Length: 169
Image 1 (tube, rainbow, N blue to C red):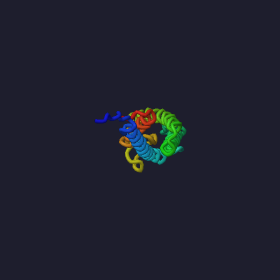
Image 2 (image 1 turned 30 degrees about the vertical axis):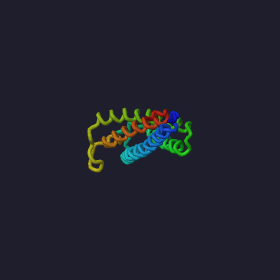
Image 3 (image 1 turned 180 degrees about the vertical axis):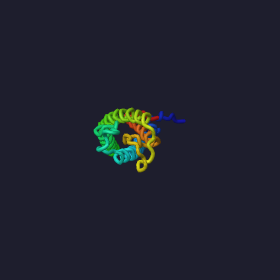
Image 4 (image 1 turned 90 degrees about the vertical axis):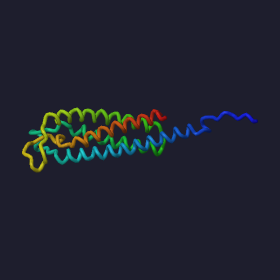
């Protein structure tokens, strides 16, 4: 009988499996990010439709335009960085993505805290065509869409962090 040499990890496929898991996780992060942006676009469209600068003295928005704009632009910019990372496989792009996502998350939490105050303080005004009450535009956000956007954002952040840190098993 011949003695067999021990099988190294590289030969057993463990390293390949780990790389495959990382690729899968990064692609899942890409898809969750895209769906997060779509939910955010729904909220942005509602905010734009309901926002009227003329009536801002009666029911001013609690979500400043620069915060909303920066949140959206950093979210899209981070997505572009992530796509660059997936195509070029450069770790610095992945870390730049994490930095962008961190800023997006902070801005999102600020907006969520301000939105919760409006949601609790102002009663549901009903359909915008038939109502007489003037409410801040963010009061018209559908609760399920806000929750979906937040949950998908957290999921995306975790998946991106796990991919960048190499936490795959």
